[in-house]
Length: 135
Image (cartoon, rainbow, N blue to C red; front, side, top):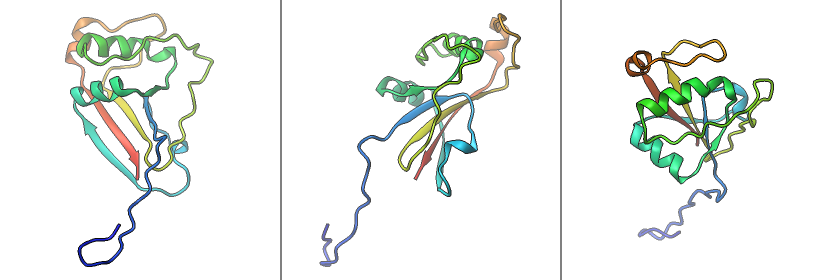
């Protein structure tokens, strides 16, 4: 692309198949080699919009109580309640340049299997939605 001075600027090539994942953990193995990462804390509205535009969900059934708490607290965030056996690992996330993962963190304790968070726990919990993008 030529600018007003007649010098050509190289514009970065953007992949058309960039992916966004949704997870409850961030792991070093998600990143290939050395890379730069942009970290952005998202609002509930931003998370809802990104999910509605399409993401790949990566979690197992261990997180169902947390997902139910998120549904209860933030009705607009549509995370499917899918049953993935605990001994089956979710899809492996590999982030290439342009790809993102939204990670949910919370101060809720881990629950033994079969228990749910009560309304008081859900309402007093803090949730943070952070998007990590490989640049």
